[in-house]
Image (tube, rainbow, N blue to C red; front, side):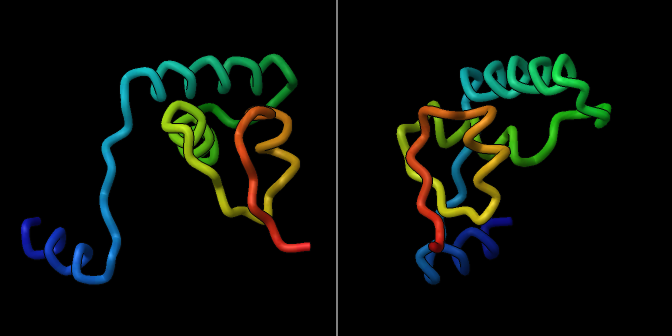
Length: 81
């Protein structure tokens, strides 16, 4: 694992741990998704990503605007026009 981390760091990629605050927000968002008639039985990866971005104050580069605007309306989105 240390070799992988070193290789990623050389490429300028840093692995971040998700906070308990982001995990809690993921659960709340998934509950909202299910109440909106969502059919998945487990949180979508997008919910973990959106929650992490939201709680970290980061911006997100994406092409999937609708899901992030619906479930994470306060995050800054960077997207192609």
